Each structure stands twice: as structure tokens, then as C-alpha cells.
Length: 266
Ligand code: PAF
Image (cartoon, rainbow, N blue to C red):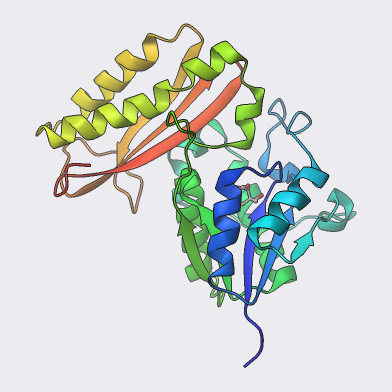
């Protein structure tokens, strides 16, 4: 049997969340390939493509320490040559949550991940659960297009105070960094409410909204309680429910999510 390749696709500016994905990949493969590519097709005009943080030397250190032994670092011309015209699009998953305010995003993600899978040819690929909708989309795409690749979801890694790790956290001023905690606080509140027996989704959304509204620079994109498989919005909490949030703090758009469970209370 040949060597197994485990793959972690990223856009770089690696943090502890990426390091945990690399360590997870190392448990599944003999070789761990990390890609770093800030993919232009998943950014709409006016989004943060140019501003997106980049630090190849820092990334190399994090990647090597966590166990990656190959870094694939293509440039835009290599990925999207002259006359490029092929895109991968899913019909249903992008019609929810982030897809509503970022209409080209998931088409860009599905396209670049398809290309990366064809280039790297991994046996396993690891994606973070912070981008829950992205993970769901990749799983669906792998099933639909018969990729022979095992997809693994890595848990959200948080700062000690609960803020989900994200390369975009680097945009936050100290005041915005404090306000950014409202996403995690909302999710925690939701977990407590479900544990206390609340089953009406609108009550949970209202409590989350009240927390976020206390932050002067926060603007809610969505607070959604939805079916964790289809992302359809639900009104009653029964079994497992995904709570997902997107909130702009100043100009920085942050996302976070948590699975709520009526069985265990969270
Ligand atoms: O999650 C990311 O960093 C990106 O969306 C991905 C999967 C590397 C595709 O560009």
C-alpha cells in the first residue's frame, strides 16, 4: 500500500485552529500537505481580498511545527490561467446563511477545493467546523462528484475568552476585539436556554440579538437556528439544531456556530 496523503487547504495566516487541523491530518496520513492560497474567486468585489492577511514565513513555522511536510503555495496565475471558465456550483447549500450575503463565495470555494483535490490527490482532507456551511458543502460535493476522499471536520478552536480563532481576528482593534465576544456569548446563552428547557427558536434568537445589540459597533448579518443537515431555518428546537451567526464588528465580518442538543442540553 502506498503512502496516505492527508490534506489541509487554507488561505494562510495560520493560527492555532489551523495547527489543530494539521495535527488531525497527521493522524490520518503519512504525508500532510498544507495549501496556502488566498482564492480570489470566493471574494466578491468590495470584500477583503487585497487586505486578507498574508505571512508565508510565519505560516511555514506553524505548519512545520504542527506536522505538515509539504506546503503547496500556488499563485493566482497558476490556479486560474488565461481564459479560465470552469466553476463548480451547488444548488441548495449556498442558498442559506453566508450564501445570502456572499452570493459568489461558495461557488469560489467549491471550485478551488475541486482544483486543489485534483492537484494534491489526497486520501483525506480536513476542514474546520467554524466554517460549518463550507464543511457541509464540501461533504456534499465529494458525494455528488464521487471524489474518493474522506472528509474530516476539526473542532472550533477558541481563544481563552471564547472568541473563535480566525485569521480575520487580526483586523480587530482592541475595542472591537472586546465586542467580538458577543458571538460566543450569544451561543453560550443559547446553550443555557436549551438546557433550561426553552424550545422556541425565536426566543433564543431574540436573546442573542439582545446580547449583540449591547455592542455599539456590531451589525448582525444573521442569527440562524437551523437543521444541521439542510440548513433550513427551524422554529422549534428538537434533537440537534445548528445555531449559526454572522456579525460585522466594525468592518470585520465574523462567523461562529454551535450545535445545540435537547438531549444533552447543549
Ligand atoms: O476555509 C478556507 O480557508 C477556504 O475557504 C478554503 C477551504 C481554503 C478554500 O479557499
